[in-house]
Amino acid sequence: KLVVLVIIVVVNVLALIAFQGVSSWVHQIRSDLNSSTEEHELMGALRSDLRNAKSKLKHTMKQYQRLSVELSRVTASLHNCSTQGGAAAALIAKQEASRGELQEFVADRKFPLGWNPSLGTDSMMSSVGHGCLQAINGDELERFMSYEVGGLCPDDDNLAQRLLLKGCEPLPRRRCFARGFNNFSDPVPFPQSMWTMPPDGSINWSAYSCKSLECLNRRAQQKVFADCLDCFDLQGREKHRWVRVSPSSIDFTIEEVLLLATKNNGSVRIGLDIGGGTGTFAARMSEYNVTIITSTLNLGGPFNNFIAHRGLMPLFVSIAQRLPFWDNTLDMVHSMHVLSNWIPTETLSFIIYDIDRVLRPGGLFWLDHFFCIRPQLEEVYIPMIQHLGYTKLKWEIGNKLDRGALLQEVYLSALLQKPTQARI
Image (cartoon, rainbow, N blue to C red; front, side):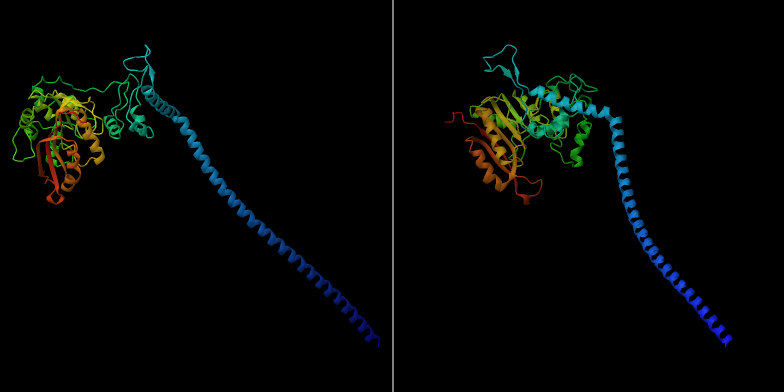
């Protein structure tokens, strides 16, 4: 019994010990589990914070890179400003000087002696073409007026002509010296000069693709598109213009024109050739003691220099310019090819009325090889010409076939005489 009792006590004690151990172990496990959950939650929070920190760091790095690039640009700009500041300041000063020089030219200035009764004013203002006002908004006029006062003018012939063709006519005057020639030769005496080729050294070639008269004369063989292809060749077709009788009825000779003028109580002493190329019409008319001024530009060649070397008078004005002659003063106005349908109809109307203005009563208007399409001739140009009320001394129409018959292009050559009686 004692043994049994001892065994029971021992078993209970062991059971109690085991139960306490298990309970303690379970509590420890629960405690460990709770601790692990908190750590897991903490680790999750830490991971989330780390991800946010990485994202912010990445964004910050991008901002830094952008700021770094911008800083480099600013640094480069500052460097350029520091290294090129002198050039920039010089450019600004040059622009201000060009504007100032233009303002100096157009300023309204008082006469030193006060009121001038003959002029009816006490001041003088220099004139420029209305197209110059539009050119002010660009840089071409500014470049044209950019020069050193009292120095050598820029080599800008093409710029000057481009401004003129845009309506900046007349061009503003400049206070600089025109460029000369490297090998200028004295001109040949008149009248031998009319049919003598000038030396290349007496022409400034910088504005032209050709650099010699030989090059200009080769253009006809090379079929280069240009006005007056063979008119610099004084021994070629140019030598026979207006003097050789042609089988074509539209080719008038000077002799027959002057004969018609004489028969109709006319005399020809002075006149104008509009767009007269290299001045051959003026040269031929001088052989009949008639003085002709030739208006021309320098489109593709040195027309004005060439005319002057021939001992003839060039006039550098465009077709859009009002003729610089007083009313009823010229005996003749001639134009070959230039007055044609390439000119806007309204503009051509103004030109024809201006020609009428400068012709004296009984003066001659020689319209030489005016070209257009046949329907235009009948519907537009013949009524325009007839409205002048001129007498038709000679009137011929012929086909213009150089571009084919399908275009229906025609030439009109006409010798017209202004009425001698005053219009009422």
